[in-house]
Each structure stands twice: as C-alpha cells, then as structure tokens.
Image 1 (spheres, rainbow, N blue to C red):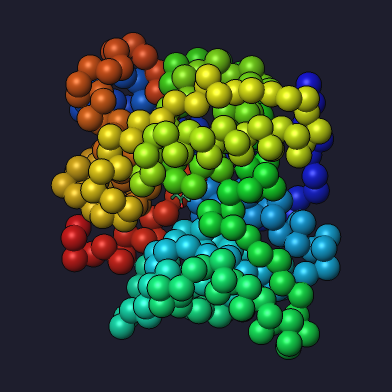
Image 2: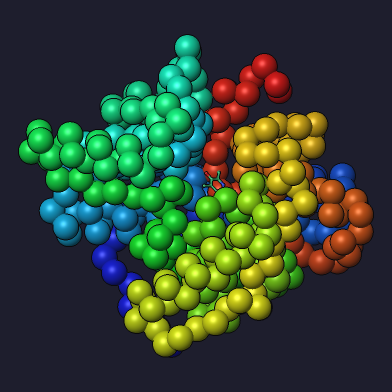
Length: 324
Ligand SMILES: *Cc1c(COP(=O)(O)O)cnc(C)c1O
C-alpha cells in the first residue's frame, strides 16, 4: 500500500525535530511528554499550514496560476503562511478575512501586510462569494487565481499530513521511541485526517487524540472521516476506512474559537517557563490546556509516553498581549 504522492514545492524545513519535555513532565508528575516541532517548519513564522502549502502551491503552479486566494479569521495562521509561501514562489496573494478591518495591525495581520498580501474584509458576507469576487477582479487584471479553502483542508492539503506520518514513523524508529498517544489541536480537520490516514498506511499504532478548538466532536469527526477517505482515493489507494482511529475531544472548545481563558493562559505560561517553547493562544494553547487537564485527572498513567504535535501559531500571541 504505497501512496502515489503528487509533486510538491519545497517550502518547509523537514523533518521537524522531536524533543523531550522533561521539566514539564516532571512538573505534571504524569506521563513522559515529547513534542514534535511543526512550529519550526521555517516559512514566515512556521506552522502546520506550511506542509499543506507545499502541495497546494505545486498544484497552483501546475494549473498555470500566478495568484492565490484563501480565507480565514483575523489572526489566521493559515492565511499568514499562505501569504509567505506566495511571496516565496513569486505569486500574488489575496486574503479574504472574516470581519472588519482592525484599527491596529498586530500578530499575523501585521505579517500579512509585510508579506505583501492584498486583504479583503468579508464585512459579514459569505467568504466563498467574496473569494469568487476577488478572483474575478484578479482575472480582469490578467491574473489566474488558485483558491485554497479554509485551513487548506482539502485532499491536496491533507496529503501533507499523510506524508508527515511517514516522517514521524521513520523518526520514532530511528530513536527507538514508542509513543502511546499523539495529541494535537484540530480545527478544520485536514491535519487530523492526514494523521489518521498516515497512521494506517505507515502502521503507527499510537492512539491519535485530536482536541477540537471550535467544532463539536460529531461535526469534526464527520469532516475528518470524509476527508481521509477522499484523500486515500486522491493518493491512488483502495478504499480505506479509518473512522475507528478518529478520536476527538470537544470539551475544551466550549469558550469558542479564539477565546483565551485562564486554562490557555496557564498552558502557554507553563510550556514557556518550563521548556522555552511558545504555544499559540488559539490552537496549541487550547490543546495543551486540554492535555494538562487530562493528565491532572489521571486520564494518562505515569509511564505512558505522549507526543504533543506542535502545529505553530505563536505570531498570534502578540495580538493577545493585553490578555497575557
Ligand atoms: C490551522 C491550525 C491548526 C489546525 O489544523 P487543521 O488542519 O485546520 O485542523 C492547529 N494549529 C495551528 C497553530 C493552526 O494554525
């Protein structure tokens, strides 16, 4: 069962390191904690979207496009990495951001501007319609646009996390490390869909534990299931059903997307103070807060080995300065 990977453009520093977190493990007196540093993918602040953009922009080039359009929230890491990737390959970039223009540019918004992206605000309109409008404007200027969905979570973007599981499985074999559970933040579902499909293909037996940052477990599970099945077909594999590997905890999503509570603040502070690693307020801060809570409740035993997959996002910290 070998996936037929399409071409990609090299944008990320791979493989990303796996590091132990001895001081955090000690403090929590729970499991042995490790971290996979996809915050260090290297492109314009790094993060998980850089892996996805390697495949997405390769397809954009193959289709003869010279402009890329995508969408997200005000502090979207996906939009910021898309702007950086477009700059790196010499394409134009338009971002359709939810909401209204803020009075000061900070965090990812500031970086979008530095990467030279054109920004359009939805002002309450449907982002998909606004993206079509932007594509039409670009066409009238002679530019051919490639549209990327929210979070880069289609079969093309998801492919990157199937391959990331090959990378992880090789690394774990090399250092003879057995991981019981892999924990990560799940948003639009592409990362999790790639992880579950890749785990199946590369025989990674660890528990795969997604912590939803916004959606209900039922909604996200349906999305991850559909995406993993469609991605298997995209990679030329036979029908693969990985639905029994999709585990989602939505208990920590309650406060809503992008809302920083005392739990995220504590997680960000602990990991910074104990390990010198920056989490982000929206995704990894929430997932780590969940993991810490689960360890405190005894959900994981002392000698269990847990790998936290850091998916990036630290540039957004600056936009939360008043809450941190
Ligand atoms: C987008 C993002 C995620 C979630 O990835 P999905 O593929 O959308 O589920 C997690 N962490 C960070 C920092 C992100 O920017």
